[in-house]
Figure 1 (cartoon, rainbow, N blue to C red):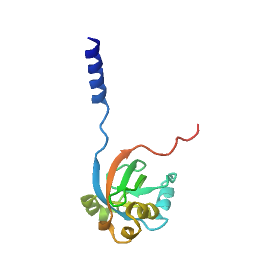
Figure 2: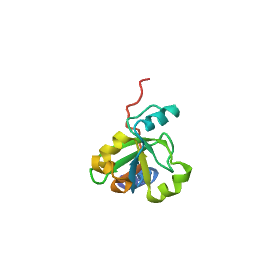
Figure 3: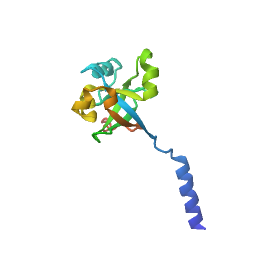
Figure 4: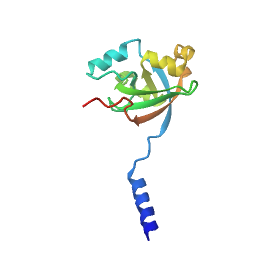
Length: 136
C-alpha cells in the first residue's frame, strides 16, 4: 500500500510541475553597438550582460540562445521587441536581435557580419535569471 501511495504522490507532483519550454529554431541578428544597453537603461532595468529583443516574450524575462554553428550559449534578458513594421517578419522567421558583443560570440565573427540567415540559433524561452540574488 505504501508503494502505491508513493507512486501516486510522484505522479501528482509530475503533473503539477510544468514541462520546460520547448526549444525553438530561429535566427539571430544584432543591435548596433551600445544600443541594447541604452534601451535597458531607458526601461530602468539593470544590464544583465546580455540583452535581446524578441517578440511574444515579456520584457524582463530571460531566454537561452544557443548558436547552432558555434555551440556557444548565452542567457539573455528580454529588453525590447521588434518595431511594429518588422514584427510580422521577425515572428515568421523567429528572428531575435541580440546586443552586438554577444551576437558575435554566439554566431562567430564571420557569421556575425554576414546577415541573419548565416546565424541559426536554438531558443528556449522562460529560463531563470542567471544572476545571483541581490543582497537583502
